Length: 371
Image 1: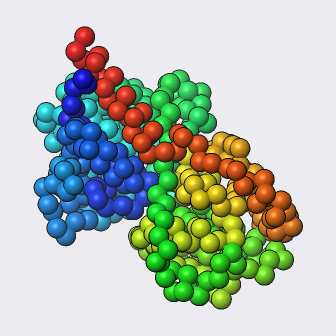
Image 2: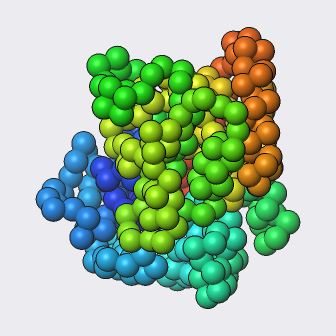
């Protein structure tokens, strides 16, 4: 029988605070770890929680200091979380976010077996220009030096870390968050008709290319509408400008935090449009694949990997390509439905499969320690 482990998780906003793919990973993984008899501690941003229970669903919660800053909130919180975990009795530490690369020096000094999920190519994202880009590239490199295991979320991201930093990684993807529920009234709320709208889901940031997609869509011949789910939790020129495009044909919902509502939006869309540029495995694409939505996607190596065995239409990063491909997509729509009729989400995007992969990594650390 395998030894029950004490596992700490650092780098997300906390539990059960679900905002991004990282928080979803923390939720799905920590709940399964506890169900299988392991002890889990999740470090949380103190300022995000009005109530601060010590445990939720059997998961231990530690609230470390945080600040309201787009740039420094995660680093500030992580510093105190790493200090705390170094003096804890946890067997294994899981860190998310490559920004935490330098802090691996602390767990290395204190001989805490630590792995990090590094996510995407943060140093290329427009929001991290200048010093931010330099920091993320340096942090990602340091992660490959200080951590005992690097986890990437796709085969193509694995190649990036191998070619750029000379470091092998373990590939573990993310899973779907879709929930079957016919009671949602989200379509009525936004006056949407089934199969009469395109759907975009993601933060309103430049590298998700929402504005470009909307502009291309408006130039196309489509008589449908386009629905944009998402926002940013701070005042931002890009997101403010994109919202000025709002009309009866361009509908902004803001955040949709209820997964049942989000599922209905995916399940009833004419097609999902994916413009994410720098990530590996993207949770919003997984959701679309899980429900076998018809998909138009920005042509990147990461998106091609996710769309393996799924018939879709790929576009380039310009308005004319998007407009042209939307017209082509509508002409081929019935053909795509027929070709995708038997599509099934690959097992690597199943949360139980993902959990077993992480558990194998954690148990590998303790087996090494016991030799």
